[in-house]
Length: 125
Image (cartoon, rainbow, N blue to C red):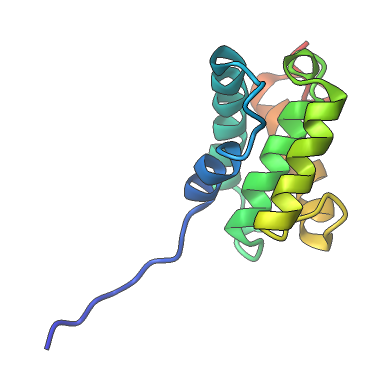
């Protein structure tokens, strides 16, 4: 018999799927920018042992939230589209901004980003 070893989805896999739920009004260039920073933040989590116990979906969602709230990226999506996106994530994925894992992961990811960029607050702009 074949012995298959199934691996759970990674944070990167979740990231790609979460971004598919962005409202269609968000243009492709903005989606690419959001993806690029979210991917970078998600990749940083792999280097930190604090994220071993955090679900990959919470890491990916936290990275997206941090990107959307970054000063430089805030302009890419209006507040109403952001709210629409968060409702879609809650409905289809079951993740919410106030989930304990998300609340715990977000400041850690901000610190990792700040450290990687040599900035104080983790913001790019």
